[in-house]
Amino acid sequence: MAMQSDIDASSGKHLAGKYSIVGVGETTYTRGGGRTTRAMATTAIANAMADAGLNADDVDGMLSYSGGDSTPSTFVAGDLGIRLNFYMDVFGGGSSTEALIGIAMGVIEAGMCKTVAIFRSMNGYSQVRIGGTGARSAAPVKGDEIHNRAYGWQSAGQMFAPTFMRHMYDYGTTPEQVAMVKVVHSEHASNNPKAYYKKRYTVDEVLSSRIICKPLHLLDCCVETDNGTCIIVTTTERARDLAKRPAIIRSVVGRCSKPRIDMHYQHGPISTVAGHYAKNILFPNAGLGPEDVDVTAAYDAFTFTSMLQLEDYGFCKKGEGGHYVSSGITRLGGKRPNNTSGGHLCEGYTHGMNMVIENVRQLRGEIDDSCPIGPDGKRQHTYDYREGGCRQVKDVEVTCNMGWANPGTGSAMIMVKG
Amino acid sequence: MQYGLGQSRHGLGNDHGQGVSVMTGLTGNHMGMNLTVDDLDIENVAFFGYCAKGDLRLQKCKENGLVRYPPTTRCPFSGSANYDWVSIEPKGTVYSYNEVHHAIQPAFKGKTPYMLLLVELDTQKGQPTEHDGLRVAGNLVTPDGEMAPPEMVAKVGIGSRMRMVFKQVGEGFALPMWTIDETAKQPEKPWRYAGE
Image (cartoon, rainbow over the protein chains, first blue to last red):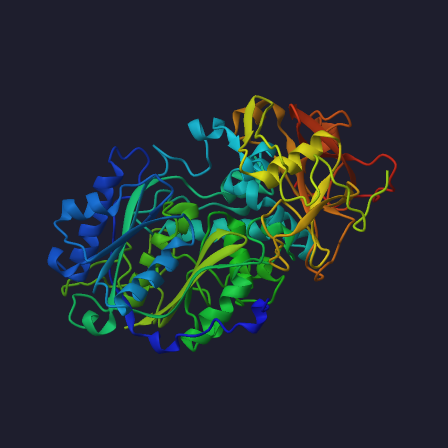
């Protein structure tokens, strides 16, 4: 068999810049919002269409992802009066966002449709909780699942913990360093009026919160919320006629994986995650490197997942992720802020969508913070990042999203200012 | 009893390891959890069936002689569907772990803290590449297969030497578990999470 290393996956450079994100939208991030996933999906898509200046006749493709906890595209499109030339509802959680953006580009490239609305709608707090609590936690354990669930090895935190532990063992990463991910993202969330948690936390508060599953404290884990989110993809050529400055997609990676994803711990080093492989598609296809990126969004299902990805995508040397996330670089005002919305740890849990939405707004220079709105109707950003202040990063040209399914699988995307 | 890769012992009345002539599914109960293996899932039926006999067996590829875990339909290193079930010495070193303090599944609610261990077997360590190893999952248990008490949990970390025990969960159905290898030389201080 050919070795993975013999295969050049960095093909498709001719698509760099050909597609853009032209509209983004979401519902509020709530707990117990009292809305169906169908209602939240239609609200998020309607908001994204309004953002882009598109009407129902302009959207002819739809993609969604879920774990059986959403409403299919058929109902959602029907509600919105959209006649579809293409749709697909796929199974998946984290890492689906960037992967579906790539699929949207592919189906448009194939001539199957022209403009695709991608949505994720989930009552992740009030209906189906991602940790597998509630009725699902008592479900019978079958076949291949016995090798994990029968051992109480089921929730995301439980499944990922051996990776996190081994990173501390291999590189001396400390709990204090990793806690800084939550501290920094909570600072960002405090400047985000729509974040579910706006409170700023300290390292001590993170480390004194109760242990869920070593090495994870409660505050190392993301929030659970109810929300719908939407991203609209079309060609950059078409984007030029729309309402907002496009966020141009330079490269995209979808569910790139480590070897042996039937149980990825069989192939080490287990303290290395899928970004190690994904970066070799992401950066060559974009024609850019980590040093060119102004803002990152590294999926923060847990503090550790942000750190591991920033490290394996090459924003610092392997093993120095703990230093990187505690150095101030990832803060608003730092050299390369990460998850400026507060991400999954603070803003809301959307399986990656809100981190792409945030970077689209960063590239437009239109972050929705509390800065005053000027006579031209545009927000006058102060770049004062104190609590309750600005969240817009100055002069953003390049952003990088890193989506996480598990240590063995991830997706990514580089966008540039349109 | 001898162990090792060179040895191919055929259990359950089959010469080729590709399932067993008369195979039925498995049903079991572990701490209140219903466990089932479908009869078509011949690899898992065989694996847990050998465990019920106190025998850790893994699939050894007939093409390249490499063993894999957990059960698969083909060799991840050659793509071959031909294999034998071979007995493996059920000993190894803790490669990583988690320690759960907030249980999700009802079966584990009264068992915290409990440990999930990934134990790297001595067999085939660092093969076929330096990054590969057979890292077998299981809970930390007492020698008689009960979930370990807190004082035992506090003793185990990366580097601890472990031996396998088999927890019977049904007829012809057992789960592999790990306990401290009392006869082995243990590290003076196995690596454990710092924040404790």
